[in-house]
Length: 103
Image (cartoon, rainbow, N blue to C red; front, side, top):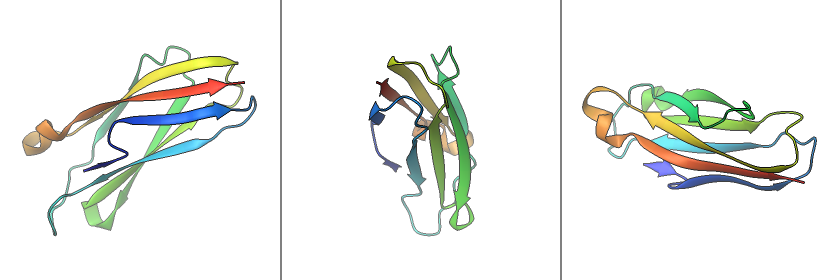
């Protein structure tokens, strides 16, 4: 289960700010453990977004923090966050839009 499910929006951001947004990936069955996801930020040619992954509850969930880079220029910036799992969880992989508008 993904929270949020479809997109990661930073909304309007004042220039010089470096906000973070979080995606939580949770197991759907009690006691289930997920393998660590492989994360990629696609179409982020200017490297304006970065990410970190933290495991929770012994593998029952992960938290993916996406951060906007310091000094991101004004304008609209888009990327895709790809979250992939291997093995039996490959069907649970997901891509979601990441959007920020710097003013």
